[in-house]
Amino acid sequence: MYNVPAESIYSANHLRPGESIHIGQKLTIPNAKMLRNVISLYPNNKWKYIIIHHTATDIGKASLINRNHQDRGFWNGLGYHFLIDNGTLGKGDGQIEVAPRWIKQQNGAHCKAGGMNEKGIGIALVGNFSQDVPTPSQMDSLVYLLKTLCNYYKIPAYHVKGHRDVDGANTECPGSRFPWYSVRQCLSTF
Ligand SMILES: [Zn+2]
Image (cartoon, rainbow, N blue to C red):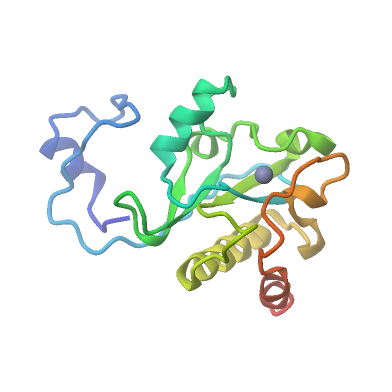
């Protein structure tokens, strides 16, 4: 993400390659360049859907939501696979945070309905789109993420759904003001 080789990060932090680090641990990234979004991809044929959520909060970041989901008893903390930040709590506007459960290719804890936790990639945007709309940078990152994932996992555009559009889900998520029109338009052009 910062265009710094892993070896430099290991040595700057006195870590052995492969050594475990924990959520919230501060790392020094020497000679960090400007942050860019990196989507790691893993061969896996279980991902058939993408489910979009909002956090229903004005501010947020992955480590905070991780703690919140843990407190609510969600299996393994942060229930989504990706979180797209809105420039609050020190995160970049449009920054894509990759959750540990994506790196480990674990089931989600974001949408029980329709068995989506087992076959759906969960993406959440920080914000409350019952009242607001996502920032332009969040939308750019979402489209980039959707295109990358749909392409790699061969997920058709009609399998990209809002949480509330999954049969049996009883929620407003990701909010009535979520701009589906522009998402659908972007997805139809690749
Ligand atoms: Zn949701």
